[in-house]
Image (cartoon, rainbow, N blue to C red; front, side, top):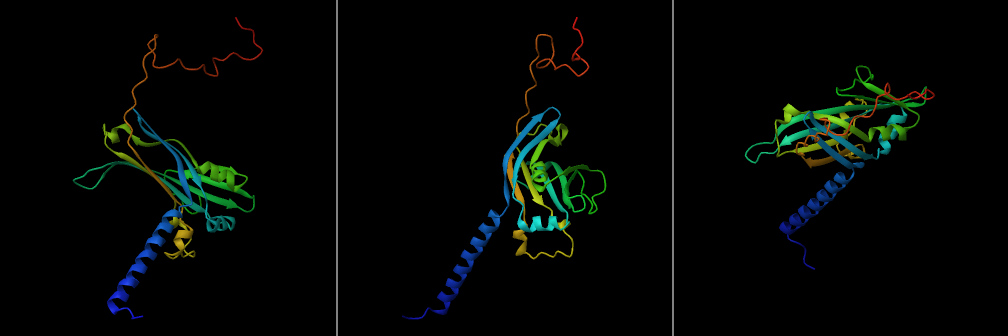
Amino acid sequence: MRPLLPGLRRAAAALVCAVLLLCAGASALAQTHGEVVQLQLRRDAHGLYLDAALQLQLPDLVKDALAKGIAMHFIADAQVVHKRWYWSDKVLAHATRHLRLSYQPLTRRWRLMQSTQPLPAGGLGMALGQGFDDLSEAVDAMQRIARWKIADADELDGAQDGEVRFQFSLDMSQLPRLMHISAVGRSRWNVQLAQVQPLPPLAEPAPLSQDGLAGEPAAPTVEELPVQGEAQP
């Protein structure tokens, strides 16, 4: 069997490298550790609202770090973009939500903090905090995003042709500096879920009822409800 010529050997080696790179890229894309199960958008006269249901699968390295008392930071990011064929896309609105998940060994409880601003390492600052008995409960809370206002009405400015780009990811820049992670090892930590949906049209206002009010009459308030045991007129 005649040996391959030098040029053919180089071409064959390049082809093998290209195949390996493609496989590695496909593997990296697949290792997102979850998915966006549901994403709903609602647009009215006040702005644009987002509801999402996620399915998170925290990597074992993240779970181990949490068990050792190292807090993990996550970011929910939503962009409203107007696509332009003649120039770069225009960002009409941008909203972020920062989450900090930590384990407290002394109390054996999990702490989840949420804020519209980046959370400091100490967990202080203006943020909404919740406590949980186990990790699964904390992850369940992270997986639900309800009625998140991602844009005001004036930011959309009557836009019709656009899209909403949603992403939920682990903020690896918040990891301690001692935990140096190489580019190869990042895929074992990476948590990145994303979905794109078209910008919905402005919802029509509710039709007026016979008494001149929009929609159905409101339910009685607590003050209007009869107290149990009182005689009714």
